[in-house]
Figure 1 (cartoon, one colour):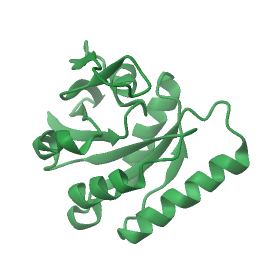
Figure 2: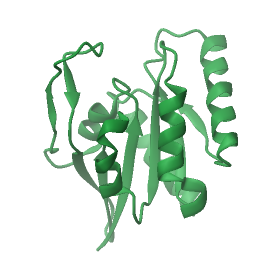
Figure 3: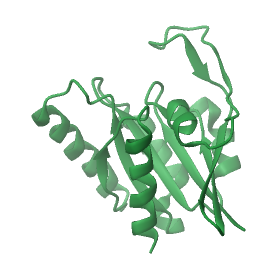
Length: 175
């Protein structure tokens, strides 16, 4: 069986852990602990969240959710080789941390490794179309700065249908 890796990166609270839980067919390995500082939520990921899904009779996908803070970049190193895909989650409703996004794009360098990349905007259920479109334009500008060609889509990481649509898109882009 062919085993591939999908890295899920993004800022705090963007839905990385939830997406791993939603997609995984096994009981996912999570590394959330109670946050000792105010980050806008009670728990935060301090290691690698891991899940797995079988995509076909001959292919399984490991889903690696890594913390978005640069202080955990040593964990980025662990997953940043031989990636099938790189998924970047952006949380709608707050000004994205473009400096951190820049650092993640520089570190993972999907344009150099020829890794298929998708950007997914989360938490858009209550957003208006113009604001969501403006965020998409800002993200595309950052991608262009890094010479990364990637679709920017809206998803709900709690929804299995929405989360699986990302895998369909990755598959289409990889073929």
